[in-house]
Image (cartoon, rainbow, N blue to C red; front, side, top):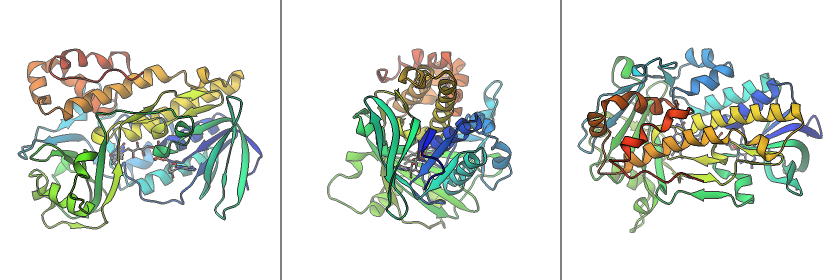
Length: 413
Ligand SMILES: Cc1cc2nc3c(=O)[nH]c(=O)nc-3n(C[C@H](O)[C@H](O)[C@H](O)COP(=O)(O)OP(=O)(O)OC[C@H]3O[C@@H](n4cnc5c(N)ncnc54)[C@H](O)[C@@H]3O)c2cc1C
């Protein structure tokens, strides 16, 4: 079924994290197998990118392809208050020496296909329709994977390193019982696509909008997509969305939409073109990033509330950092957990910064406008986090003054 019985690296899952890791390890001259359960193209949520994605996408050689694609260009994020009042947009270009003043709103069906094709072009062996059932261990060391092919046939393949990029399925973190939820961010989401609707003109046309509902227990995203499509999603605490009496998700979605004065006029005359989908989007993280012969990337390691569209960035970045650690480990003959997870410190600091900003947004007594009025010198630092420029030593400076105005989470261990 596969070209070889053993590989330098087997990557499970061809989302952004797995495709990045596979592409970069293969580019390093190693034998890579990338296994994806689904047949592409397939619908996937996670359509808005952060500008810092451009760094990894540049390394993968994909920026020109995206720039000439039909994906809307995103220059800013704009917030709407419970009464529907719009804040001034946060333009990414406002950051001093912004390296990536713009990013894209993508159809994940096309984006993920592009990423997987890129991994194949760089030398990875890519299979779709192949589900991995288990990771094989000898003692504490991962040595391969086993699974089922498209026709249900069982197989096993050996690996010097196994990369778990299975997204929220988190195959290894669940097997090893490593997952830890953030009890304060147990949210769920209901989302769909509309056709039509109002878009702002000029450079605001591709902006992500974050819109509070009047009662502030939920919020909506609005993400413009190619043609006249727009992705509309609702996020709220899970126990609020599923409270009795039990109602169909479509009804919940419509009831919440009726409470969102910033969004309603924009959807006038628009038509829903997809049944709503429901996903739980708990914030969680694995207690360990890596072990001997295995490493977790993307959502398979951790996930932060979708508020700031950080998921694909964290997937790309962890895929890149893991690939570098694997290439180094393969050439040194050291594939220990310490080596494969050595990038964890700076990565986690960046992920934590996003989580802190999520806490600030959800605190009804906190407002970014009030914070910036009191501390205008921190506007740059704030926009840098919205850009995704979070993997740096001084990313936390902003949270010293912010902690005086809002309760921020304890650091994850
Ligand atoms: C409601 C919601 C809204 C979001 N909005 C955004 C957004 O606007 N912007 C953003 O950046 N992020 C967003 N995200 C997050 C984003 O979707 C994820 O963070 C991102 O897709 C993670 O990439 P990944 O490669 O880690 O995992 P995934 O993209 O989930 O890819 C994992 C892949 O692994 C495959 N797989 C799983 N199990 C197996 C198996 N056993 N064998 C083989 N293959 C397997 C799956 O089929 C899948 O293709 C959102 C998330 C939610 C829940």
